[in-house]
Amino acid sequence: MPMPGHIDPVPVPRDTAPRADGRVDLIGLPREEIRAALEAAGMTPKQAKLRAKQLWHWMYNRGATDFTAMTDIAKAQHPWLAERFVVGRPDVVEAQVSTDGTRKWLLRSPDGQDYEMVFIPDADRGTLCVSSQVGCTLNCRFCHTGTMRLVRNLTAGEIVGQVMLARDSLGEWPSQPEGRMLTNIVMMGMGEPLYNFDNVRDALKLVMDGDGLALSKRRITLSTSGVVPQMERCGQEIGVNLAVSLHAVTKEVRDEIVPINRKYGIEQVLQACADYPGANNARRITFEYVMLKDKNDSDADARELVRLLRKYKLPAKVNLIPFNPWPGAPYECSDPDRIRSFSNIVFEAGISAPVRTPRGRDIDAACGQLKTAAEKKSRAELDRMAEEKLAALG
Image (cartoon, rainbow, N blue to C red; front, side, top):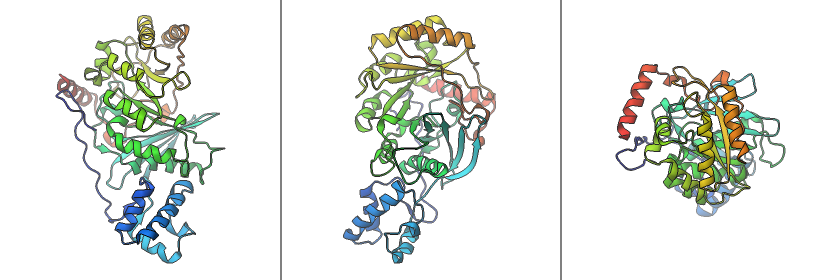
C-alpha cells in the first residue's frame, strides 16, 4: 500500500497478471469467494455452496492439489473443475539446504516474478519466514533485500501458498495441531508486510482458520519497519504478534539505515507500539536490532534503548541480530564482545535481549540476506540507488 506524501519512497507496484491459461487459482480464496467463483463459472448456487465447502477442506486441511484426489466430489465433475480452476503452488526454481539445516526456496510466480522463503528448524519449533512482496521499497541500508526494486505485491494466494508449499515439503498433511515441524510463521521475508496489508491479512486469516491450516495467531509474528498508520489496524484486523525493525535509537542513525524513519520517526513508532491492541507481558512486542560496528552498538545506544522502552512502558523483547554480510554491504558486524556488552546493559534493565544465532548464512538465507540472483547489482549501482531514494525523502 503506497504512502501518500512527497517523502514517500514507495512506487506504485504493478498489478498481478492473470494466468496465461485463463484458469482461476483457488488458493488464497476464502470460502465465500470459492463459492462465488464456482457460481460465476456456471455452477448452481446450491451445488456451489456444497462444492466450496468440500474444496476448502481438501485444499487447506488435506493439502490436495489435484481435483481427482478429492474423493467426495463426483468423478464426472473433476474435468469440469480442472478446465476452469487450479489449486496452485509457487514454482520452485531452486531449493537449498544450509549446513545448519535451514532451507531456502527460490520461488517463481506464473507471471515470472521471483521471491524467496526460508524454513528454520530448531529443537522445539520450526519457523517459516514468509515474503509479502516481490522486491522491497524501504532501502534499509544493512539489508540486501532492500537494494531490490519493488516489482509488485504478492497476492494472498502467493503468501499462503508459501506456507502450503512448506507443508508439502515437510509432509505435514493433513493439518493437525500436534507433531508439526512447521510450528511458527514470521512475516519477515522479502517486502514490508504493512505495504501489502489486505493480501497479508487475507492470507493470514486462511492460515489461522481452525478448519484449515489451523496455526494459532500466537505463533505468527508480523514484522514492520514502522508503517505507523497500519500498525493499529494490524492488531485489530489480524491480531498476530508484532515485531518492529528498530535498529537505532537516534534520528540521525535511523534516518540513515532505516529511511522510513524520515516519515515515521522513532517516537511515533514507539507510541504506535504502546497503542498496539493485545500487547501485554504475555505477548510482548519484539524489537529487532541489527548490530552494526561503530554505528549503533555503543553502551550509550544500549542505555538510550532502555530509556525509550521504559518511557513508553512497552512490554518488550529485544532481538539483537549480528549483521549478516552480503556482497558490497556498507557495514560490518559488531564485535562479539561489543554485542555482549550491549546485551548485558539491556538485560540488567530487566528487558530480555538475546543475541540471535545466525542461521543459513552459507546459502544467503539469514536475516537481511534474501535477494533473488537476478537482482545482483554492483556496489556503485547500490550507492546510486540509495542516493536517489534518500534525495526523494528530502
